[in-house]
Amino acid sequence: MKPIILILLLAANFNQIAQSRYEVTPSSNQSVMKLNAGIITSKLSETKAFYQKALNFGITFENEWYVLLHTPDGKDQLSFLLPQQPSQKPIFQKQFTGQGVYLTIEVEDVDAEYKRIKDLGIPIEIELRDEPWGDRHFAIVDPNGIGIDIVKYTNPE
Image (tube, rainbow, N blue to C red; front, side):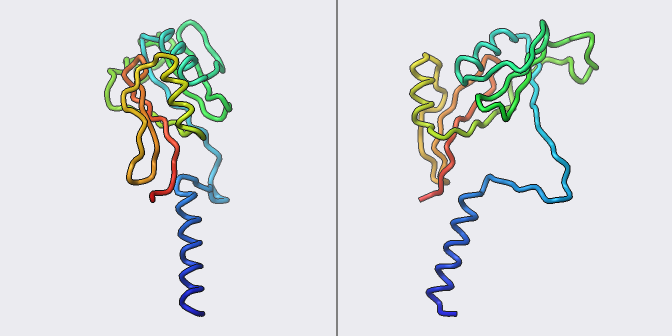
């Protein structure tokens, strides 16, 4: 094989790997799983309003002590639970203390999301920027102190 053809094949293969760097294809022997992260908070109503307003999340289910939200496309969910619920076991009763958790939300058009969120008057914690590793992103903070990184993944230049 000529060196130039080999280089082109390697470059094409690398590009394909880079484009799918965050996509994972389950193997045939894996079971299907769906992740639903949950946060225990006393700020249930403020949190629900924030995710609906800032991120266009919908309500999948709610009652007086729990709300299950979903992303606009309905693929992903996030739940919030009031602390010290007698129906819950002790490991699900302690309130989140506001540190050590962040969320990343991938969007198609990060510039449009930045403008939309800024126009809503929601404070921007990290201004829109490009990173050397290829991400274009900005960040906001929810009522519980959770940082939300809103990102468009791209290949580094």
